[in-house]
Amino acid sequence: MKTLTSFFDRMVQRYLPDAFLFAIILTIAVFLLGMGVMGSSPVEMVEYWGTGFWDLLEFAMQMSLIVVTGYILASTPFVRKILQKISTLANTPGQAILLVTFVASIACLINYGFGLVVGALLAIHIARRVTSVDYRLLMASAYSGFLLWHGGLSGSIPLLIATDDHFLMDSIGTVPVTETLFSSFNLFIVLFLLLTLPLLNWYLMKARDPFTNTDASTWDTKDYADTEEEEVPPENSTPAERLENSRIISLIIGLMGLGFIIYHFVQNGFDLNLNIVNFIFLFMGILFHKTPRGFLNSVTSAVKNAGGIIIQFPFYAGIMGMMVESGLSQKMSMWFVNISNDVTLPLFSFISAGIVNFFVPSGGGQWAVQGPIMVPAALEIGADTAKTAMGVAWGDAWTNMIQPFWALPLLAIAGLKVRDIMGFCVMILFYSFIPIAIGLLFL
Image (cartoon, rainbow, N blue to C red):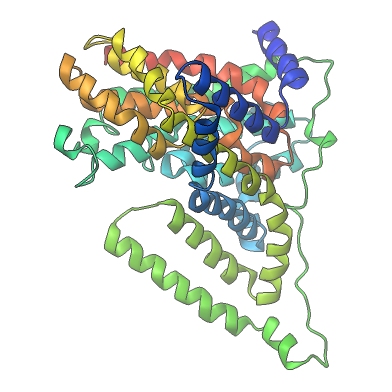
């Protein structure tokens, strides 16, 4: 285990480029595959790429706000005290790894955007206390919780097919979450990973190279856990300065936001989507910072962390455009369908989704590509359609461990490069295949 972990860590450190260059390399690879495998012309591939380039603008804005609003809320004295209180549960490197993995996993089961931010920020607070913990592995542990998201309450595929009028309604009708999220096979996968991922990450800590110093004390953990002094307005302040330091202004707009949050949950139940998570983070940040000036100072510090997301997501949208419009994603999916039977289709759906996820790293977008292929195949050969859909969902979550797309918010908060955590994530990828495959095949 130590040899294998060290090998992948060294390979990733040496050969994996920055996340932006990774997106560029994927762009070139899909461009060439579209011509070589599908027979598309260079002009057509450029057209597919350019046409799809801006298709993720809304999503990119949502993910940018996850980082920004998460930072804003975390930098408030109130939330800092909560995270610091939780961080006191860990006093050794082993306890730090176990705690971060478990909390991040629970948070991602509730909502994936919430989980990414909470895991990263808790890890930073723990790193400030337990300075001997491996900072890279600590952040990889926080990211490993993201593996569970598509089996949880914000899983886009099971929630979509449980909704009236979804695009495959005529084929499979509505599929209740009792057959997907709360099925025996999904609960087995979720509980198995929830209980064993912390132990795996703890074991990876034991297997790390003792001659490589990556303790938290050697890394810049930024200022998330630092205490901010409240600004005192000058005695002879102008009307504008008094407004900027007015607690009443923040209280009024904050309470308006809080009112809408309550209204949203009363009307929609526990609908914790990305927009409402960002809304909660934003307005709780306004309330807890107490004044507009304190809030804006936090915003200034926060926005610098969103650069990677803003610039890279359009490239992934272009990759998705080439994959879908050239037919490359459909061809990959059909290859697995052709070798499947009624028992193995959910497993092969999972594997094919894991491969497609490299190029279409969006759960909803991936289902739009693979759903129209996998569902008719399941109906034709008599496979379980709900389990086949969950196979695609788990495949989407599975290879996120080695796809930088979703790691960008966490890396921005942590101040790390993708190569810093990916060697550990490869080991998590290999391990997680086992319980997911057992759940999809035998339960």
